[in-house]
Image (tube, rainbow, N blue to C red; front, side, top):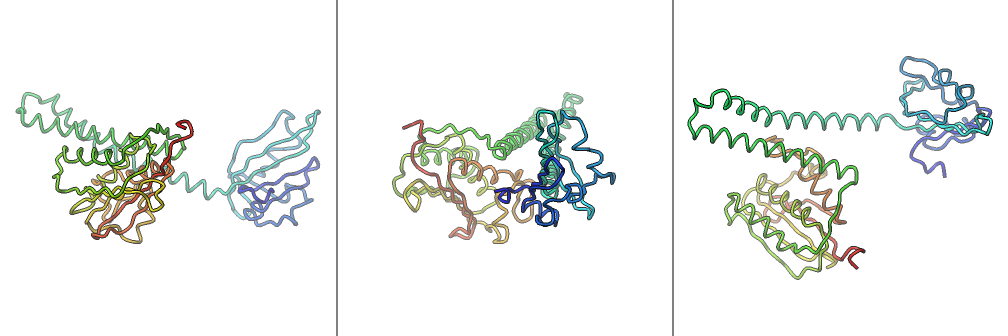
Length: 345
């Protein structure tokens, strides 16, 4: 059973002899279980801190305070330089003597990769925020200092720019909150009966009202859909992001098709454009955070939209894929399961 654990596990008895050394510990340390069992754990796992000090001498697991129950995670090193993230816990008898000393090991490489990803996230967000905030600050300061020098048309242009950049900051913050909820599994679903056809029409009408020509869009409904219990706000967000993506990065007519899925157990929605499409080698990266298409145009959005779409679709129990559209552009297709949730029965 211990060999099924993803983390390395070493357990020593009251005499400091190793009684458990699982497969993950073998893989991380290069020490076989047969070689480790029965030996003093300090010889099996000679860990040192970043200053080169013998960690077990500093810790004194069997001779230290009898009130200790565990040690928080710490970065330690094997003699060959392999870095491990180490935690430890004690099991004591009524007199406080150590009966079991358990050491848990984790690979530091994965943690370092996660920390780099977080650093990249912070760097990207800072970059995305700097430009609109600089614009807002600059135009606001200029208007306050030289209001009388500008005519009404000039003031209007400046205020419209400030308003657009403030919307951009608000949109980025909203997207970051969505990403946080998706990553932490804290998305709240407020399901109710949703008419996917009507929701799609609303999204198209919104694009037309925002200035897009009506003939830019073609909407097709194929077949009768089952009853769909979905979160209407999130469905609108999914459709809005996919249509915006097609308008912004695609070309030609944007076609939206709503139909029963292949097994008629839900609905499928396809959003197609007639642009250059997505290179085959990039298909696997499309739904990652901060992915941008060929050219990496930073004016084309934050690069979070498709990541959020995938998270929202999967939160409904659906799936989303991307492929080459019949017209040569990109086709994003997502499915949603039918049926009411348990509480609606």
